[in-house]
Image 1 (cartoon, helix red, strand yellow):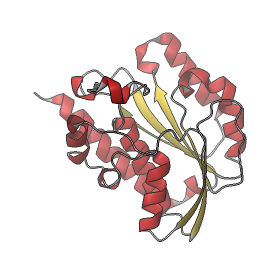
Image 2 (image 1 turned 90 degrees about the horizontal axis):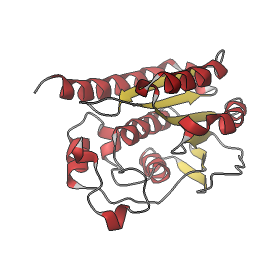
Image 3 (image 1 turned 180 degrees about the horizontal axis):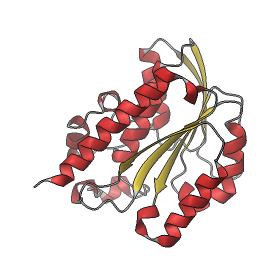
Image 4 (image 1 turned 180 degrees about the vertical axis):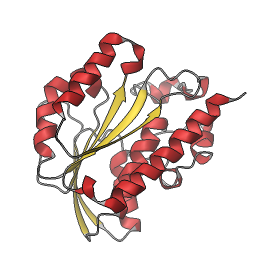
Length: 224
């Protein structure tokens, strides 16, 4: 667990977490899988919480990523989600028109093919944003990142249940991995909503990369 602690206070002073954790990896893999199934030559992409373009990466983080099955994400280690999308799209021959910002409120959505919605505190603030995301998913694909704290207690679990209740009846793909192999007191969760989740090819890709990462993490905590 200590391997994920930030090693350089000066570089990491403005960050709430260390880049390259299991949530970043899962989210990055999903973004790459989505791009691989996009099928178009020009992508309109919006990221309202884009953060920095690049992040410093510690050696323990680098070792964990390179030792994981996340081959797609490892090619873009140290880059933000927005930079990852642009880099992976370029590799696939897709041009990207990106609308990037780092704002929390108010949010203004634009016409796009893919919206990444990953504020750090969506688990706590979902009532503020949920209707906006639900509406957005009617017209575009939306990938949502959620740091799911429901294993920590009854109130957190009910918070999560209430959120999922609001999404009943929507086409939704959900993948999750433990936040830590030894003490999994939270889940890193990524959702895909919108027109594309019914695509069998995309669903298979997302399922496979999620299960591969889940097994890698859980196996690491199962035996010493």
